[in-house]
Length: 494
Image 1: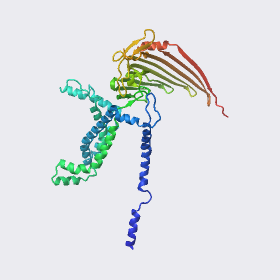
Image 2 (image 1 turned 45 degrees about the vertical axis):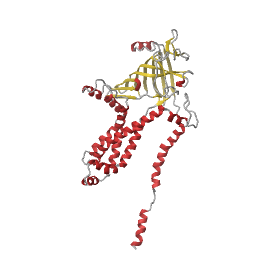
Image 3 (image 1 turned 60 degrees about the vertical axis):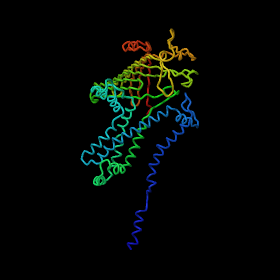
Image 4 (image 1 turned 30 degrees about the vertical axis):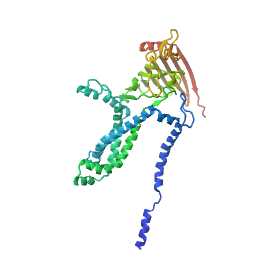
């Protein structure tokens, strides 16, 4: 009787009931389809639209974008460089990651968890901090150049920043933990007895690795290689038409930035916070921004705060104007005029919150803004998909300032066929002061009266010439626009 029921029992256990394999896979498949495949399909449809300079998108169904991509040497060079960097990064991660993964997988001591944490720890470092570290290492005054010069290997700094090798090293440092963790999980599943058997049969370390360990670890090698290669492909050269306001595309310069923040104890009556943001762009752009927050609370009812900031920036190419010119065939029959901008900007916001009683309060906000910009050079875009901006009067054409009007007269090709054109002198010195004061009085529950005073002052004297004391004096001497308002809110209740 038991023989009669045994097959039935095995059949019942082996028969799938409830959730099937397809139903278990369905949620993940649906998530991937919605979150990945549908956006890719939409992006593919957009790629079939027509590209027209000056317009965002023209509805069409054409393969011109793909034909242009696979026949243009610029795009092919970018594609080849991206694949080359990704391949080199993946190879470095595999060569460096396999020994480390093997050590982690075979480690039996109590330090294994600590070693795993040290491998994963770089993933918690932000991009700004990581970029600052590479700047310290690869800069012209970094410790690599300083060490080589100190050892007498080189006599002057070598170019390490903004090179392909620096990019490969930086991406490899980010992707290495993914390779190590992937390989380690697979190697842990390989029986150590297999390796010992190979050694006992006379195999050396290299033969054991080549004929035993590597084939058994191949799933981890493939998974880690694919993962790091895809992540390395994310490094890209960006070209956009935003700089030309919808015109020819230009290379978007890479940026390295460092942010610093220091804060005192905010629980005290007086506390301070200081910030600094330092940025360097390719092709010479840079910015330095410093700020502070000062807070004073002498007693509970009164709070005073000031948040001054100062910015100094140099922009290589700031868009100024687009001038139609049929002779400018290299840039779609138009001259895209830019200027190198040197900018100084100071902002001083002040706040006062005073609570006189539970029903009476005063709030005051004021902001002084001093922003000066000088354009020492006026340029034009030389060609699409570049960041080449020849200077008028130096590299191409001529430029003169109108003796009577604030205009530049530019002849883009000198004695050539292009017609001269004019653009306003873009230098500026904008000074602004805004004051807002609000007195609120709740004279009965739910009903309140507001008295509001606003003042605005503006001045634009001395464009392009920065002098903090003089500009601040000009601002307070500028005519003021004052507005007084009274608002009454009455609650109509029972």
